[in-house]
Image (cartoon, rainbow, N blue to C red; front, side):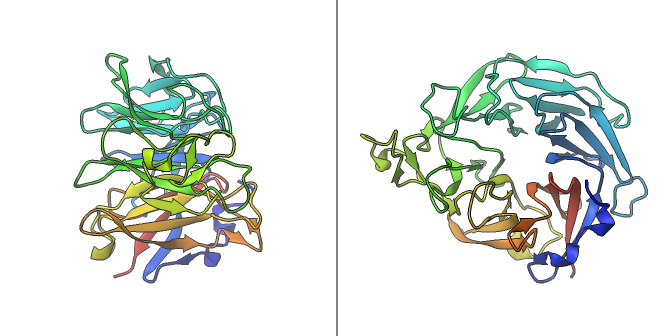
Length: 351
């Protein structure tokens, strides 16, 4: 991180009324997906650093004082998920497990290979992980390109049984999903997806999607955003044949991690909402994203509102931070991984 956490211009951040943001942990370079154990230990993957971290607040002051590198030298270990005291890590083509890290989060661990059958292509090869209620791992496999038509498992979301190694396809036509969560009531999988590049600054949109039944096709590479035929692959494809997004997100804003809020620390109107980390554009003029947004659902489970929740990491077309993941902490606060500043923020509400 180029500067200490105390030097970050948090006063530039604009939050919804009643909320405040502070640095929870620093010295977590390139922090990506987050996971928290019941005992409070926080874990973070990374993409460019090749490291997996354990982060602890040992004195209970809501600011971490211990950051341990549990594993190093891994291939884009951005995705992580906890189960039965072990930490599962997605490292490109492999799923690894770090045994016993919840009980002993202060010592490096030798990773064990759980599965090594995913593609080795590095383009969109970094992953996000989450266990479903049946103990199966949800694993996205991105398209190995900006735009191309490749056979599965590329551009899909897979469901992996860690015990047997069996996989099944949950969703098709998914270019690059780096964030998903299960609806707290219906159990349906909702996920973000990044749209293709090189069609301009405003098209196609990123997407927030919902899997209602296994095998749905969300359009890539033929149809983008539910209604935009691809100039190269769209001929002969009817948009009606593909699942439309639940919410369109501005092009190139790079929607990554997302989570349903189910806690009690925020006002009642936030329960069941979705928070999305919009990482920010790399090739858009003017730049866009660099924010956390909030999606509200109505009583029928449909999107009723989509609006900024935190902005300010982008100023005068220059960014000083990039949200990469969001996680509801055990105490109901919201944790945000910033892979650019190398910190994790904590968002709380003032009653």
